[in-house]
Length: 311
Image (cartoon, rainbow, N blue to C red; front, side, top):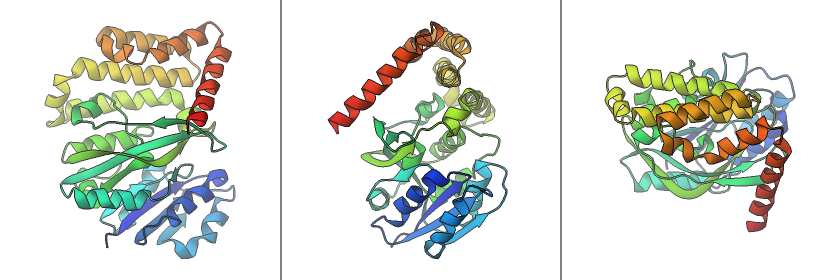
C-alpha cells in the first residue's frame, strides 16, 4: 500500500492545531506518515503535539527560519511515495487522502494532483467553496492559483523540482507548483478535499500587502530560467497584468486602497481581460476609497449566508 507523508508546519496556532492534527489522524486511509514541525511555539501548541506524539512519525519544536524551512525539514524526513503539507490552521475533509491516492493510482503519469477546497473563517464557518480548473504551465505563470491545502505530490516529482525556496515567504507554494509543472503533468480533481482558514492572524491577512512582492519575484525567476523564459514570453503581458492584479488584491486586504488602485490600473493597461476578470477587486477598492467598507462587509456577510443556505 502506498505510503503518504503529510507535514504540518506549526507556530503559535494552538487555537486551530488540534483540528488540523485530528483531520489527518482521523482519515480512513491507514498508511500515513505524519510529521509535525513546530517553530518553538509558546502558546500551548507543543502540549497539543505531545498529546498525539504516539501517532506521529516524527515531530520537533525548535526555532526555524520560517515556513519554508519548517516544511523542508519535514520533506527531508518524509519517506512516502506521495507527500503534502497541511498548515496548522487548515484541515482535511473526510476521505481526502484515500481519494488522492486513488487518483495517483489511476494516473501514474501525473506528478501533482489538486482538488477544490472550502474557505472558512476563524470560527470554522464556511463562507465560500473555491473551485479550480485544469491549469497549464502558462496558467500558473499567469498566477492562476491552486489551493495549497488540497495539493498532493509524488515525492519523486518534489525531489526533481527541489525543495521550497526560502526566498519566497508568501507564494512559496505557487513557486513550487510552477517548478513541478515545468517537469511533469498536474491534474485537477473535481472533489473538495480541504478547508483553508482565513483569520486575522493568518499571513494572507496579517501580512497581505507583502504577497505582491513574491508575485514579481516569481516573474523574475521565470525570466531567468532557460526553459520557463520562452513559455513566459508567450504570455508576458498577461502574466505581468496578473502579477499586478495579485498585488492589487493583497494591497487592498492590507489596508492600502490607493496603492491597490494603482496596481489594478497597471493590470488593466497591460492586459485588460486579466484585470476585468476580477472587477470585484476594483469595486472593493472603490468602496474602500470612499469610506464604504461597511457595504463591502455587508456584501461578504450576505455571501456567507447565501453559501450556508445553499449547503
